Image (tube, rainbow, N blue to C red; front, side, top):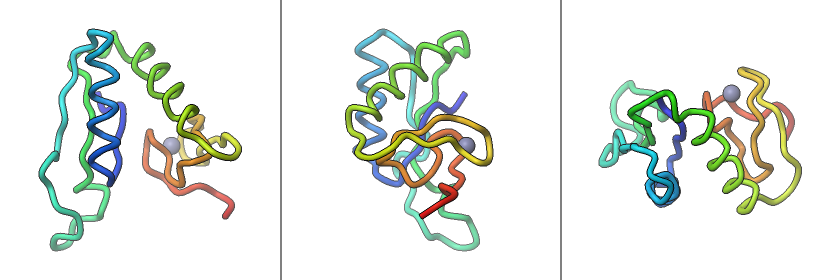
Length: 103
Ligand SMILES: [Zn+2]
């Protein structure tokens, strides 16, 4: 189950560290992928954090959400695609990578 994706590899590493610090088993996919290759959409190339056991999903989401809020500036917003709440600093939904509706 994917819990986070970003074009910024450092954010992805941070999320993995956050989860590992709390003993949530996780791994990174696409860690060394380079965006913009061929016909792939950029999102197909973004590094992603996955948890190995979906039972951890609520806990992982909570941890990531809190971390995003700490980083965040501006208003939280809800994804028009999947309804997930996102921190104001994010222009794309962390959950499904849909763009923010306004601005
Ligand atoms: Zn979404």
